[in-house]
Length: 345
Image (tube, rainbow, N blue to C red; front, top):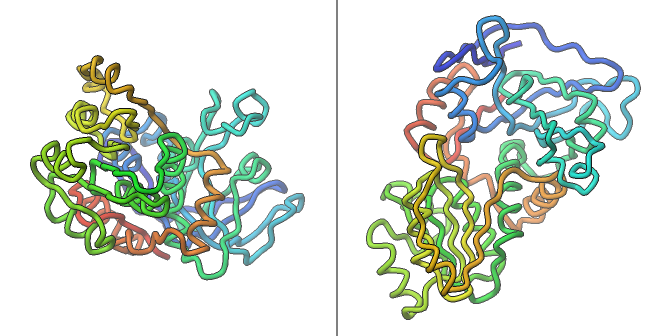
């Protein structure tokens, strides 16, 4: 089979390798779509622990496909079934896993991060993932591309559950990428009266507006525009859907009394210390949250959103490539061309 394997920093090679063999408790998946996310780009740019010339790694944790084969002891799944796979695998027995928070398990492993992932014609789904609920059937009418992109949507929904949006509220989202637009879609679904989307790229803002025309797109002078749109009160919710310290600093100044701020985008290790005005948080009674990853419950719930037509993901996938063209896909992803890049088989 063809697979894209990371050998080290900026060293991604498309190669012919053997199709994985499965045991009696595993599933062999024929990949139909795999999407690129920021984690893939960071691993490509910085290298990944354990991925080297002796043990290259097939990247991608956002993928969906058709079951090619099931092990003899696998129940609940069958050959030919369309499924999507949540990548994070907890130990299954710790308190976090038992409480439904396996995505925060201290022994977490992830497909496409710690073991071979979806940038290949076939991927092996390990027994723990089969047993712990990582594999989810795809409803009729849901594309493989949308099912692959659901992993990102589930992470956005995890954040949405924390900050919440009430009907009639004003929401500001900083970062006009696929993630930012997913926050937009959930805010719109919840009944936000105004959704202000900010980015330094006029092209990305225009692309987002073409998908969601109700967005108020703002490139410059964000604080002034937020005050203007809210009659001086500020926004009820601010989400930093980008990896920028400046966005985090700015978020508090945009918030109304009793506002909610969510740090969705993490910061690079050399820039993770941010100077904040604590009095703004204190006197405006702000709630500040951070979120990362998603539970299997989030993953299945957002797949249902897609199937019901509540949230459309297909339009966010602006570029599609064959696996042989994955270097072009990564180049466009690194250059912020379009919104979401997908490898289709």
